[in-house]
Image (cartoon, rainbow, N blue to C red):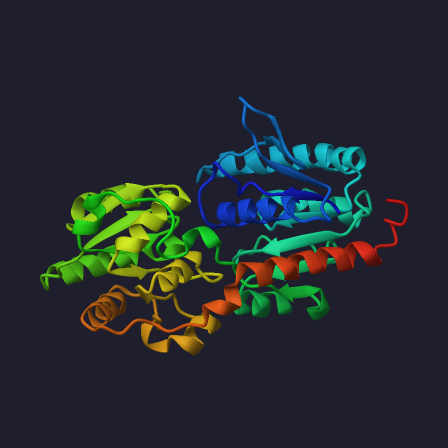
Length: 361
């Protein structure tokens, strides 16, 4: 198989998407049927092209991270031009048999290239969250949904037969007892943890106000927040809410440091695909407070799932969970990385085998 993967979520970018695509590329590189993997990702002026084994990393896509509308528009425009130019050239030069890409608004060009049949190979879209930035109809051969609520979301927009439920994988490098050694200062502190992008949709303002409520009740835990800050008001709130520490963005291994040593993980998202950090907390047998409206967590861990995103409810749930010894029980085997990798490669092979445009490749 000769594969092209298009994503801005790739190291050194941080976050769940970056961890997922790095895992996928590394696993594909070990697969005996994969001859070539080209990864088209965010620009790096020092190293545009990197090659290792059968992996070719092309760091040429414009990547402007900003909340300013004009800069977002510029990023979309530059990405569209780059994709229109580079994707057909890459497919031809490397004799690519399948394109797999991360559903983001900046990738509209891929949908158009497929619709106009400039791209004739199979296309797999990959929806990792409930973002409205989805591909156009009839512009892909399969779309991956990593959670049941994403499946339901996609059912309202696309024909069911094109939707493939392939859960979020858990990776071997986070098996308890393995991995990096941790500094003692993390172990000595009692804290609860939020890990993820700092946006309004993630419920961070409600969580901060919940901490204000708990501080008035002599709550004994500090809240540590790790992730990219994408809202200006967050810095103002930090100066006004005691007992909250903003660590900033960290690597995946560093985030596991905090997870291993926290008392509790909370993810009060208003809109969430699944929440990789919740699964990692479960793997380390930590208390976890899950976001609402995620079928997997509502089914197996209803006592630990938020019903709504409000400061009072978050504060009540935090107090309830930290004062009891119960730990959520959840079937993590459904996220086995080997099973999930096999499902992805089987999908690839099925699409390549049945594509009428790959007879001579």
